[in-house]
Image (tube, rainbow, N blue to C red; front, side, top):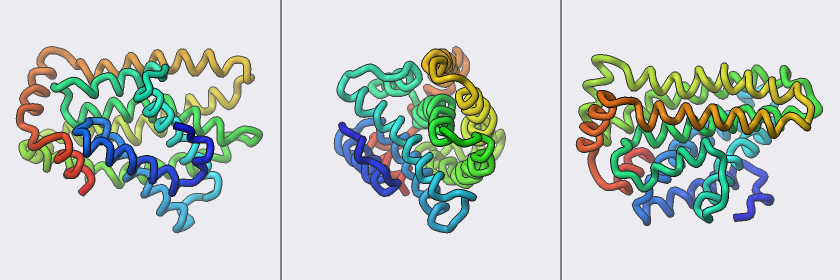
Length: 252
């Protein structure tokens, strides 16, 4: 799909709605991450409308650049074209039965935050000091933070025993925080500043190496070891409903 004419957050939301609708009709797990990402995008849009950011026009540009990296990866994968190793890892579990909803969300977040966010931040800062973006970049973490409890509750609807686990251990809550705020603030920002301070000729090599590293991190999510896998299998068996039903639970 040609995304050159996609220049506004409203258009990004329309494309996400298309993916979600396709996923619901076709019982596709691609819908899990798309629903989560739409929620983030809507929150950013509300922030821009309420003048939450220091430079709201720049934030819309960043959001569009950032989102289009996911959309391009999604459509390229659907068309069997080459995608980054990070997104290949995320999308390749789509046809597997055993990954739980949380794994689908985290592996998508891994690719999008650890790889795409830094690239988008560096791109929107071209010809400007990247430090000018830092405060608004950190405000994205406030938006992500506001969604942690919401996502946690959505997942508990899909697998009710999760409520008990969260109350007793908070392990999933901590995991979500690690993959959103911490990595967005630290890893992605560090990568963005590295890209912004390198000559154009070095960017492709740096992005390729980062992509390999991020793809390798995905293994922690998709194959965390024997004991963790057994627990995840039990969770998977306990998840309620069809893929479409789970997408609707996440949308609620």
